[in-house]
Amino acid sequence: MTNAFKYLLVGALALTLPASAVSAQTKVGLLLPKSGNYAALGEEIDAGFVMALEEAGLADQFTIIREDTEVKPPVGVAKIRKLVLQDEVDVVVGIVSSGVLGAVRDFVDGSKVPLIVANAGNDHATGSACSKYIVRVSFSNGQINRPMGPWMFEQGIRKVYTLAPDYAAGRQMIDTFTKSFSAAGGEIVGSEFTPFGKTQDFGPYLTNAKSANPDAIFVFYAGGEAISFVKQYDSFGLKADIPLFGSGFLTSPLYVNAEGPAAVGVKTALHYVPTLDTPENKTFVGAYQAKFDRPPSEYTVQGYDSGRVLIEAVKSGASDRESIASALPKVKYTGPRGPLEINPATNNVVQNIYIYETVADGDALTQKVIATVENVKDPVNGCVMQ
Ligand code: BEZ
Image (cartoon, rainbow, N blue to C red):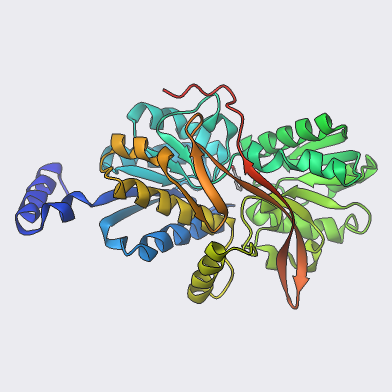
């Protein structure tokens, strides 16, 4: 539709509809992977986002335009440019990969469009490269992994070997864990990064890890790579001798049943598990289970909370890019994951981190919370919010 025709149409509608109904329409660009290694994560975030709008009875007040990043930074840049410049969205929601977030950061900041990050943990986006227009409701790579260093040391683990995919998220997650484990007194006895999205055979990496003779192995893998890694860890015989730890995406409820018994006993950290025993979470899990016949995951909650913070911002009177960007960091509530607020010094979420063990529950696998670290807030990390 041409812009001239669009303005004529809006003008005509304004004559027939109450002004509030027209001005309340918010155009959302939902920018998620719908193909590639993280496609299932994107679908789950999308479902959570729509669930928040439907639950609030506001689905018809938001127009959603969907684009696929394919988990490729240049594609992410092309798609966000299209959403902002051609579709003229009021707000962008999404981004799963830290690599894509790093690539779109300057365009978001320069075009002054609010971006609600619904997954990508890239530390720089709420650190040295922070922006008034980037608000993250998911997690940062540092936030998830920092508590695991001292906690593993307290469990008597002294020597750790690390593995992760070779891109921004893998590097940052391992970097934070390495620092926090070393600061607690532990030693990293070896580390490797596997080609991202291309490694099907983890055998050579697992052989190297085993020969370093660690007390434990700590990893970050997500999506299809997590399923392959956990299964091969067991089938190559490491599970019997060396306990496996990591960031909780490794054994996400989204795909843990595809990992099967290989995942039992793995201990990881995350900002949400569906087994949290709170009234807010029970209501959320019940509603999701009724709709999809399976428990929600951290990805669902990230999409859901992206929807909720946007709704809260719009309800507070925000209607255009600038007012939405200003309203988002003020939103605060207790939801399925527990208390949630945005630190205005970084625009990153402040939240609990749960350390959980994957355990068998009949034929299925579930999450047993073994420690909670409350209100984890990132350091400012060089952020100067303008
Ligand atoms: C990331 O690239 O930031 C990421 C992807 C999947 C799960 C967690 C983090």
